[in-house]
Length: 130
Image 1 (cartoon, one colour):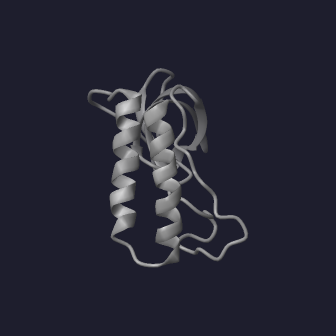
Image 2 (cartoon, rainbow, N blue to C red; image 1 turned 180 degrees about the vertical axis):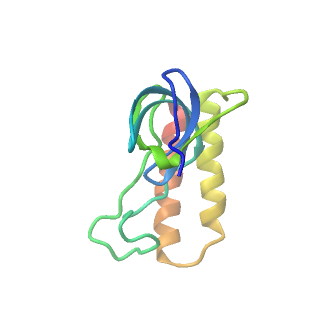
Image 3 (cartoon, rainbow, N blue to C red; image 1 turned 120 degrees about the horizontal axis):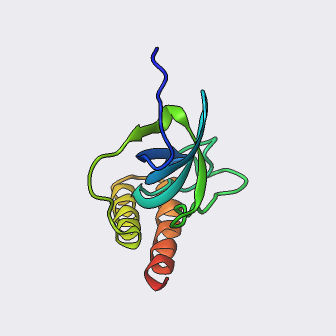
């Protein structure tokens, strides 16, 4: 298997926890990790407990915010890919990503979906005010 090679400054998509972002490579620590500076949000993180996805009856049902603009995240190299194209403005991408996640969750049945929707709506309001 060929090892991915990235250079500081490369634009990439990176998965972090359950979200996906467009960012810029800051540092690479092969073979496992890249430090990525967040520039835009592609997919908003899922709500709840990452270790028990789609379960509402967990001790702590986490509200998961998207990473902030220019926040640096330690992303597994397996989830990092080169990005070509225009990088959208962070705030616009954030609002689009949370809205897409809301639409996805609205079509799902059950208590997990209800709790997730509540958290996502709260986050959407906070993001819109920021």
